[in-house]
Length: 266
Image (cartoon, rainbow, N blue to C red; front, side, top):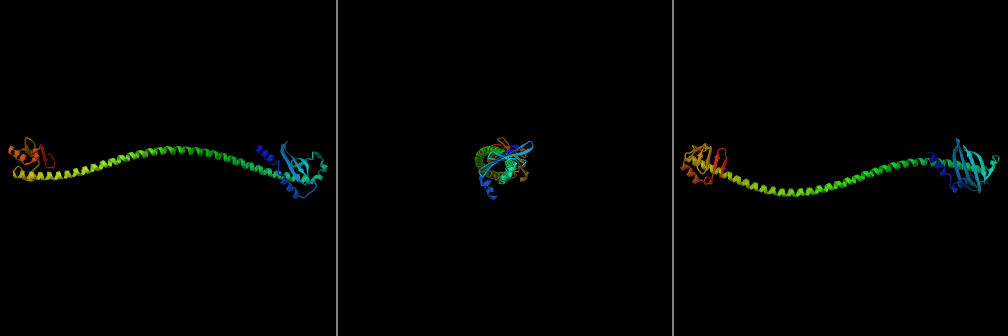
């Protein structure tokens, strides 16, 4: 803080002439305060004492005062040292000097406080700059992540489009298969009706030929190019030939039936 204080004191060495002149006019005109110019005010500490050297121009005369602990120890007018016994002749100028010293102290205190506030603000600004830099780094990382995600999304969209095309093709195939299944179901239904009609007619003939006593007695029947069996009993050749000639399904090859409704062959 020492260098800050020194800087603050140096900052108030030169004050505006107009401000000092206004102060002088407020006290009334004398032979020693027609016009006032502040040239410098230097303060330092020496051997534990506050030493101040101030030079001001009053009524076109250069006054130089040296003070120790705010008490005037010497006075010069235009470079000539004035004995302490004659200081009363220059009371107005000395009053102006003291008033200006008072103003300088007030201004120095303000400057010192402002410097303290500036130092605090500078620290805050530096901390904010670090935060801003970190945020910029995070933003840059996020931008990179967003770009990578955009590429993944683009690739996923392409794959989704391909999959959608495959799904459409599969839907067409499924639709075609459904149509075929419907046709096959219709054929199966017609075949079932035909099988039912065929077995009913066959059973009627077997009962009529007294091969089985009634329709419910038919448990199984098989037919091939050599023989015909009913319920495990091989039938005579004349029966074999009769049924082969009557039923075209027997003439086409191997045929078998069981009472659980399973028909194999033509």
